[in-house]
Image (cartoon, rainbow, N blue to C red; front, side, top):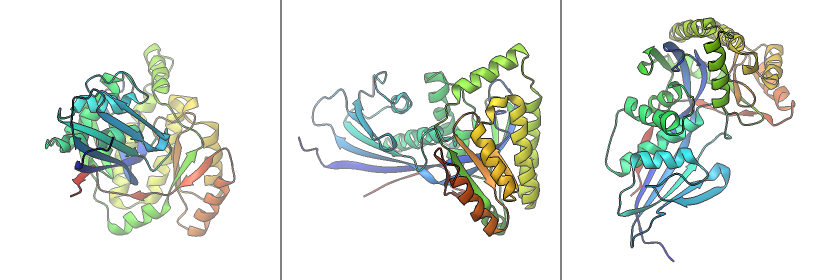
Length: 349
């Protein structure tokens, strides 16, 4: 049956997150911490088409998950069945006007499980776009909180708060968590020349397979609770986030790169498995080609991605990227750009 004329066509975007200095300290078990991260594009994209509902229909929301090459319909009032609980629970949280049928398309510019805060960015873009559909607005902190609720309260997953904040505010960000989950966000203003230099030298490497962080979080939580692991790495990484903020504000990329390396090694101290064999392979090549810094993104562990601050010499940067691409196993370079824009939404007319 031919659909009725589209009444609404809404577009939402949210950036991804890399190089989270102080990551792991934005969690309930750290209780307090500091994070300095970078927002990047291309962004996650959400498109919502809305039709007037001609007759009563239970499954009136259709999801098109382009990266998974999947599509399915579900009842927004009963989101329990379907292949993508994150999307279904986000839709249910906001709700859908009773007189509308929706088709929601979602696209990520990076592979799933990249450790770049993709699920948070998708959730922020989806929730924000659905609120816009209903002529509702929330401030960035509230939008980030709603997206965080989907993962932690509805899906019972372990995750910190930095990804949602980066997706809503853009970057570069400095996040202070003095009593989880309360936070204070500072958007760093850096000089245009430094922005251009940092963007030119940042290299994002996919480590060949998806990453799932919840099980890693649960392992580390258990070790911290039993005393098998120390809280010292969390304290050290939070302090490094403070130093990263100062380094960016001063325009000192040499110091910034060293902070990335130190953070990576303190993350290894938190759990040796947080820095995978593939990550160490890439790091060895980064050293060989005179990179200034490197850090696994997000929680670390198997799969995911790694950020490199390449040599200031473009020839070394290009040679490094070529050598990393020759490692095989799906390890590859992904293009990026820095962005100060957080979540944004608009309607086509």
